[in-house]
Length: 294
Image 1: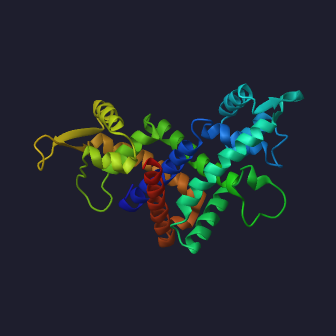
Image 2: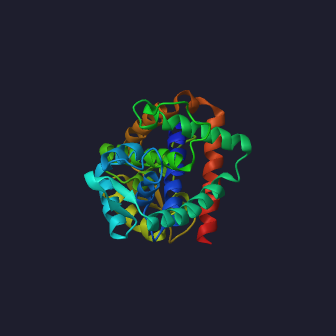
């Protein structure tokens, strides 16, 4: 994986992870992201009469995840089963969906407002294209493609990309996506040599707590993927850097994630416009997350 690929993979792992993080925060504690997506699809005309298996296909989720979400929603009175196992969203469920959607739309608006109108249109276009990759639920729908898919299909696309990234990393190296992003941030992007970060730098890049950095760094060090070295500017400080095995792990999983991105976005990955949009979108997400934390 060369520096250009590493840069794009780092940006997209960050932008997708932070989108999911913001979504989870605005839905908590009443709903999880999976429960919200299932509830939203039950309110859509195209999937309101879908079986759990069909819901999983439409929402790009694992059937077991949909089953678990439906059980939790039924226990809360938000859905109820119909003959044949087809779930029905209840009046209480519709009210909960409306309230949750207000929070989701507020989060989305905070992430989009800093982007120019042209960038917002371009983002909508690339997410819409990813939604209709061959074999997907929305690619198989008949009729003309809508000019605007609406928020739920777009959320489905971004959450599906997050899920796919998690699966790629888990299969390739057995790590969580967050742990992999820890390694990615230590991978040099602009020049050869070793990149070193302090704990506070990792905390800021990943938007995680210090406790995560403490436990994850021990875990990754024990796996032989990172090492700690003394900070020459701080007698009590340490710096993290990749080992040779850690760099190999980043290259292997990073190449697989780049293949995933290529299957979704094609030649756009080569365009400067795509790169700049991703950077600006990530900056907007960081600002929105910081505002929510403040």
